[in-house]
Image (tube, rainbow, N blue to C red; front, side, top):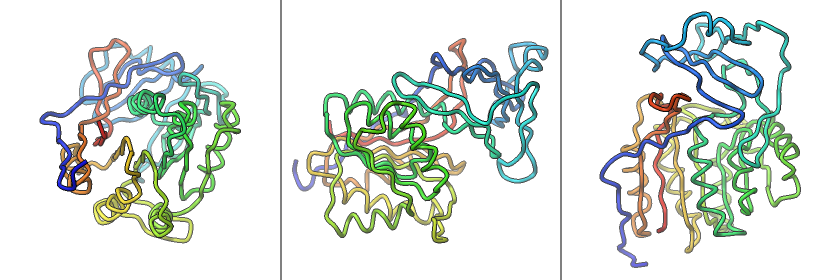
Length: 301
């Protein structure tokens, strides 16, 4: 690899489609809402980007088991249940099992559109057993467990003790608790800084930061102010034979192209290719979907 090698930036965006699977499906959408099949339940959650009209009748929507009713706060609100439901229930994506949850911020303990990234990780890691992967802002660990199931040694970092606890539960549920996964409750930026000083290297990095967050010791994270430095530090952690770096963001003012341009700058000198675009959650009918996050993926090959 030449010292002046620049990564090839894809000319056009990619729509990485997340289709339904046995335990999940986007049944219908419209009027600012999503009707979802999630394990044994049908749920309705708000989604402002669904500007079109629903295809199914209102009686079908009214038959949902749970509806999230937002409050004035950002993403906060409460669930209204049509019948008794547990706080958590088992789900699975391929061989990885995890718990769905009714959280107070409309999330379900996993992000179904990320299935497009899970499939990409699985495909890229299976030919490389033993690859070392760093997952920053790892939340409840589904991506980490996808990597572990594919044979990787994973370091999972999240600032929330509760999220780390849920991730460990998911590992037990998946039968992957004995795999080489390190669960680290720490501010992602502090952890990366320390790994750089130690000279630690990884073969792949997953970076999925929030727009805003706080570390366990009050550290403040702001995406637009702090991402460039963190990304540069992460690139310094890549091994000479590293295979990938995934950068994902949900912020409204970001785009796949802006993430790709930032990643291209940080990866200058390493060659490879950067694909970019958005993750789209597709309705089960297959011809309509909603873009929910933006990504840029660097691949060595």
